[in-house]
Length: 467
Ligand code: SAH
Ligand code: SF4
Image (tube, rainbow, N blue to C red):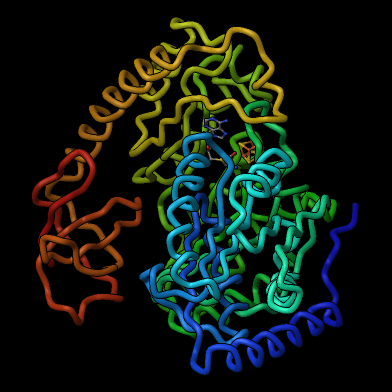
């Protein structure tokens, strides 16, 4: 299937809507309008949120951190787990009082949650003060929906069904001055049985190689110190062009861009994580020594039921190869406990895997049934208390693993990007392994790379001294 790219003409139409909205709002308010936006979920969502903010800026909006002062409030939502969805509903509920005091306020909800029929219905019937709802395939038509809302004086629901599109050329409003997300693909083709992402974000669409390189060069010239390449499965980048291993080539070419910056990427699917990729990482000067490689379960039966297309032995082999080629690499991962039918013994395979691979950090999730996924209809759903027990057991085991790994870092010196100051007034840096290190120093160091010696390794962070 050829990737559907939104044409320049279609984008120009949207740009015109931006100008029309700008004129309308300025006339209505007689001042610069303020927007409050919040994104939930993954880096992919954050990057989409930055493009949405970019469009709002073109519509004449400035931004504020206080929702009660805003003329436009937008929630860009995540559907991966039920807990995240309930939090969003709670936060939407709190907006009712703002609408009562400011009837001109526009409230907008978009992203993965609303792409689900039952959520769209719930927003329609139970949240009448939400003005605009647009799905993941209507992001590029966002200006038009704002215009429709302003002129028709009616609620707008724009949630088309689609395999997804790619649109270029919409300037992002970056949320961080030092670190930039650079999407290389959208959507996902893997259909892991627990996961709603392919249902709400559409099929995997790779961006054109040359568009990514152009963006990377621009980000470097704008002074960003870290570029994070993002996709649901970066390792399958280009498969939709009929290419294999294109990600390794892309990474190499970005590594060769001159400048003082580092490169990270996420997420790597173990089934597509090639030796070539690890070799490129090992030979590069700018790719950091960290790989996020979600394993989800340490048990082969559960992995099969999850439709992950690799087994425990393959995962261990990839991790081993990575450590052989890059001895100080940090491997981090995602894992789900309490997948339907998972027995306690099968769960113990997950515990043993984390000890064997020695992850630097781990995101542990309790399985959450998602409407429309295969796993939601599987028998033997695990009771909440059992999931929570396994969650605690695994988190405790991982804390010990991380503590041990960090202890080995004591006395060694690491180069770190200095990101800012923490609440305790100390500087915060991040090592190549993506581990936070705090130390004392002056503000001028923020945004530079510094060598820091680890003096006190803790479980989650390191304490150190500037060298
Ligand atoms: N594309 C990425 C992950 C995207 S979702 C990958 O394949 O690695 C991020 C993480 O959320 C997943 O790795 C998984 O651990 C978790 N997750 C996804 N669906 C879930 C569900 N239904 N319940 C609990 N955790 C889930
Ligand atoms: Fe979800 Fe699996 Fe795709 Fe990751 S690879 S987004 S877990 S379906």
